[in-house]
Image 1 (cartoon, rainbow, N blue to C red):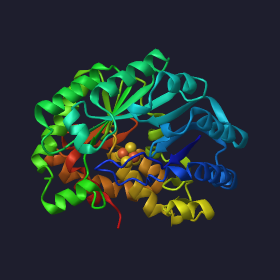
Image 2 (image 1 turned 60 degrees about the horizontal axis):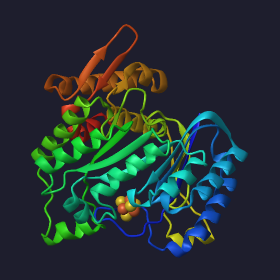
Image 3 (image 1 turned 90 degrees about the horizontal axis):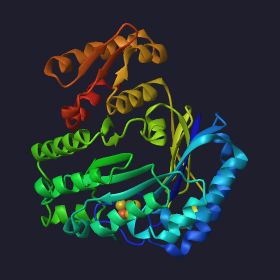
Image 4 (image 1 turned 180 degrees about the vertical axis):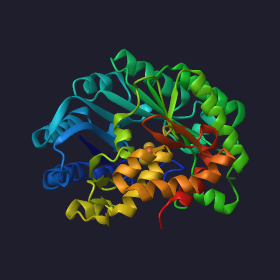
Length: 374
Ligand code: SF4
C-alpha cells in the first residue's frame, strides 16, 4: 500500500510560529494547481506500489481550494493508481473556511476525514499566534462539520506558549476534548528562526518556556486527553479507539508515499526527496533535493520514528530487516536508559520491544541520538 500527499502552499496570512513551506501569493493558485497535476502525471512511477490506501491534502491551507478542485486531484490519482475502496482521504482546513456551503460541497467529494487547526480555545492566544479564527468559530466549525456528516475529525492543538500554560491550556484541552472528535494532534510550540515568533524571541519581546514547564504542559495535555478516552499512540498524536490517522502512520511504518507540490516530501524505499523551490520556480520547472537511502539511513529512520510511537521499536523486526548485529547493538545501548527509566522493555514470547514511556517523551532526542548508527 502507498500514500499520496498534496501540498497546497497557500495561506491568506502567515501565523506567528509558522515555518512551513507556504506563500500568501494567492494569485498563483491556478498556475500551481495545474503544475501539480503535471507533476502527478510525470512522477507517478516514483511509487513501486500501485495500491493507494491514503490521500492527504496538507498545507498551507487546502481549504482555500474549492472542494471540486480537491476532487479533481482525487480523480486524477484514481486514473493513475488503484485507490482502495476504503481509502482514508483527509483535508486540512482552517476553521474560518468552514461554512455550511463549503461542508455541503465537500460532502460531494471523496474526502472522508478532516484535520482542522484549532490550536487553542483562548482568543488571546489565538491572536498572539496570528490565527484567522476565534475559539467560538472553531467550535462552530466542528459542529458544522458534524452536522454536515463528517465524524472522522482531527483537531490540532499547540502548547508550550509563554503566558498560555496553566488554566488557559487546561481550558483549551478540556474544551477540545469536549468536542468529542476522533483524533487530536498536540504539538509543542517550536520557535523557528525564520518566523515572527523567532524574531520576537531574538529581540527579547517573547520568551521560550523553560524545559520543566514544557514537561509539565506535555503531561497536563497527556493526562487530560487520556482521561477523556484518547489513546496516546505517537508523541504528538492521540486517537479514540480505532481512529488513528492511517496516513500519518504510513510515515512511521516505512510505507511508500508520493508528495506532490512545492514543499512536499516523497519516499519510495530507494530515495527520500523533497521540493523546496520558490513557488514561481516550481511553476516553471520542478526540481528535487534527493537523499539516497542505504541501510544506515533506513535503520536510523526506523529508530527515530519507532521511538516516537507508543509501541516503540521491535528488536525482532530490526533483526529481520537489518540483521542480528543491529538488534544486539540497540539492546546493549538501551540497557542504561532502561535502568534510568527513560526506556521500557516489553518482552513477550514472540517479540522484544523497546519504548519511551509517555512521561519521558520530551527527553527522547538524547535516547534516539545515542541509538543512532553514525
Ligand atoms: S495556516 Fe498553517 S501553513 Fe498557513 S501560516 Fe498558519 S501555520 Fe503556516
